[in-house]
Image (cartoon, rainbow, N blue to C red; front, side):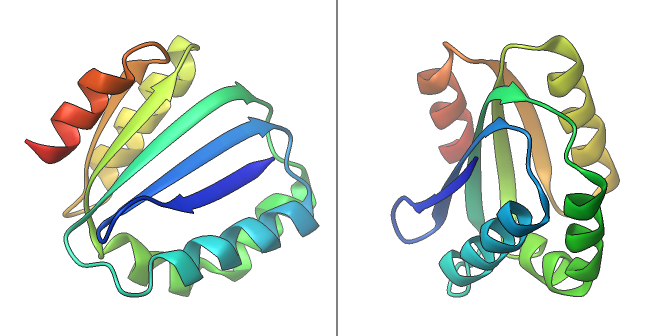
Length: 121
């Protein structure tokens, strides 16, 4: 499951649970693109409850949207990741270091208030 919720003028909240297949990924990416089209200098809050590696079809679907996803990421300045697995947090911070202009920081699942404060600081 991948849910996208627009939370104010410049924020997107994303919740990820379980394993994504190609049709799930297509819907998720299209929701994300639609929800973020008017955002500038935005923030993202990811909540990753349970994460399974996406199917090969889901990864192929994501790859097919790469040009749009690169444009989308430029609309955001910060992303906070809430997760309980240390490897997910580490990977998200490495990903943030590789994306120019996007600052990404990981927090424990129970640190939502701390993550939201960081997003707006």
